[in-house]
Amino acid sequence: MPEYDLIVIGGGATGAGIALDAALRGVSVLLVEQNDFGEGTSSRSTKLVHGGVRYLEAAVKHLDKEQWDLVREGLRERKIFLHNAPHLAHPVELITPLYRWREIPYVYAGLLLYDLLSGRASLGRSRLLGPQQARRINPDIDPEGLKGAVSYYDGAFNDSRMVIALLQSAQERGALLLNHTEVIGLIKQEGRIRGVRTRSRIDGEEAEHTARVVLNAAGPFADRIRRMEDPDLEPLIECSSGVHIILPARFLPSPDGVLIPRTRDGRVLFALPFEGHCLAGTTDRPAEAKEHPVPTREEIDYLIEHLNAYFDMKVRCDDILSSFSGLRPLVREAGAGSTAEVVREFVTELSPGGLLTVTGGKWTAYRAMAEKAVDQVCNALEYQASCTTSDYPVVGSRLPRREIAARLKKLGASPERIDYLYRHYGDRSPRILETEHLHQASARLHSDHPATEGELLYTLRHEYVRKPLDFLIRRCNLAMIDRSAALAALPRVVEIMGRELGWDADTAAKQSAEARERLEEGI
Image 1 (cartoon, rainbow, N blue to C red):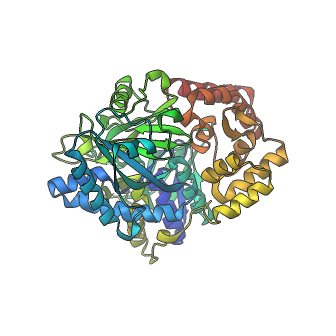
Image 2: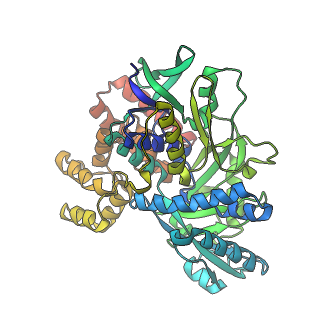
Image 3: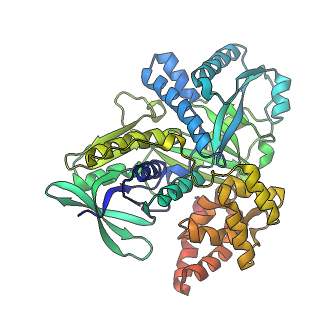
């Protein structure tokens, strides 16, 4: 008999959402990820939960029903997302500065339509702002020639933390999760895909796992998995690179974001508050699938050019604290002039051997994608169970903030520490302070940032951390916002991990060198 009902290949947003949905329906699940959970595209997004104002503009301009439906679905899912993970996702007001009179009615009308489509899922009404109002909200908007602004609301979230919350929720319901575990082959029985062969990237151990259904949610690497069954398959996806930079908080001196409505290649850019800093992006250029993409100088210069057209305080390369590049797995579309024009819809494909591939889409719609994919899995299993994820609070979101804050205060946490812990760990925050107290591990890993030694211990024991960058980039986000600080913290992180995981001197040195190389060349 197969070991599992379902094996999911890929531990990003899509795979994590599918694992949770399936586990909630009583399906036995194994999920495998070749790197760390969320290490690829799913931790390198613009960190918005949105319907997509750009997609709405395209839908209206071209009478494109696909884009229209994508926006409507995104707005529905936005409400569910914020409800199910209130510690990780929240509304954010976005200001769009406008420098031409004719742009004001055009943009305002579009955002009113966005509000209308939101309906009861609205996060707040769009409004017109005069130049002085816009500058009061965000003093760094360039005043020269400013005619006015329009504000609207969308959602913002912590993407890497959301992946972990989804996977912890799936694990609660019985899913088995393996990161740093590469699929090296598919197992066939009587012409059907019935499992995977894996190799651990930690110790090299190989294993075989069988299941009634194997699902490919490998994102940019989905075609690699598909070709394990048939090497001659045409590609299903094409990748585009999305680059972001992190700037000091002075470039965004308010809790609101800025939408740059027009770039020379027809995109929109965002400057958003993230972890006490300014996150700006993104680009959209064709790219090859690779595991650790890094931003190019050309892409960074592109972002700086457009930020400087709208910011009063001019951005220089020396201001950049960190940068990262993510690869979007876009469904190949005939006739699209550029990757920016490809509809962000997802597709499912069932191969002759029964391999189910799910790819495309966007973060906001992860839950809807998972629901439709797991419906197909249940059909294949001849198992009837309905989806329950539309009203399922993920791990960390099951107690109100005021109750969590009261517990943390009793444990001696400052207001700033309470805020940080809640935004990362929600109702599991007290466990981190208890770990700090038990092991006398309250020391910060870097004096300028709140992550502590106790937080590292907690994530090692409860959040699947196996390598230094698992923690530094995706659990505490330190490397994501300040690469120099992460480099400074690395020796202590390796020391603690070596002690906790039983590394010998050679292993510790190898892990340190690997992490340092990645941090120095770009995360």
